[in-house]
Length: 460
Image 1: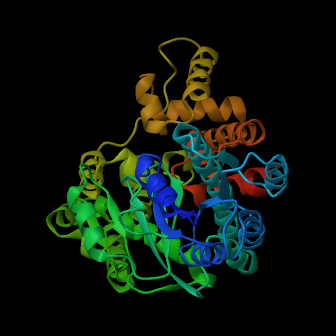
Image 2: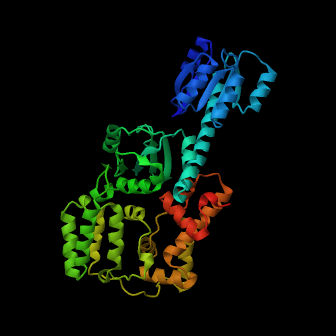
Image 3: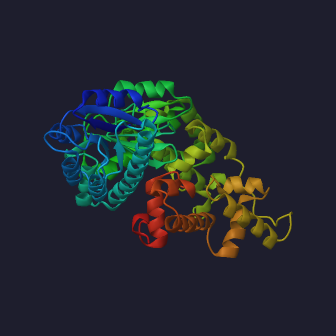
């Protein structure tokens, strides 16, 4: 919730305003009250206020003087002036100072609520823009600008505590986050200068209605390592995929155990029987102690590259683009293992001509579907099933007609749509990322830069 300070030297006005506005419904909370201008200025800084409602005539500093000093400290603070005098010169000066609104006493509560809703909208828009800039600086590794943007959000410490939630609603308020940044579809980053309340995180996990997770490192992170640690914490938050149930994860999986897992896997690749025995053993033991979702993704693609599943290392369109897609395509790691077992002795047949018409007709139908559904999870496997065609045949059609692999074509299609949204809408980068089918903001930035040459934040 955004924080409000009410400043007026008439106590009855302060009490009336506090009691008359549905603060929570508007997404607001009254952080404090002030009876003079100097106190209001001090409290605005101390409470990190987002909105100030102040009388224009007060002791210490009058409302206009207060506005000037508040805007010097925070240009984005929203100020609403109230006055018992219909003084045009005051109103004119208030407009020059960038005041949101001017209310005459007795205060029209409906009009004040309208101004407060506008203030909330302005703050959310600014926070969204600043959050996009923050993520862009994180991706670029620009520590100086990153520190400056964090300072604008009120963070002054050299280290920050962070948390990431995946497949859960916004947990920022429950976790008492100083800043909440949307990373993708049901994926949020939370920042705070003090440790997060662990009991609140446990409660959120217990109340979760579907499988999701929270990554919550117990130690603060230097700002210089923020990007690296956000990625690591995001992987921790996805541990529900390995365990099969919602979970709170505070430490990454041991690299020693993961190395041991892949050493055993490499030995099992010597023959199909050994590989089958390895998969069956994995299903019987607790894999959550051995790997995280990033390792599961690596395992999945290496399995596809094995000769026992009918694909080859050059067929990159069969491989998933990231561990997020693995979680979208399968309910859990156990489901991955089950499918691998079932496919082990069923190599995919060679491409066959389409029975539903010519190559050109099949290609046009597939391209039309992709153009209309690019924002959805459209893996090659799912696409082939929709058109009752062999995956290899669909891959052949797209490569033959476009010169691109399936994954390359889909990525370029999504990036093209993202460029359109960047130039024609006011959507945040996180919203655009999700709108074109990328469930992870940093993966979107990486692909955008690879295709376009610059990050989305620098695209014009």
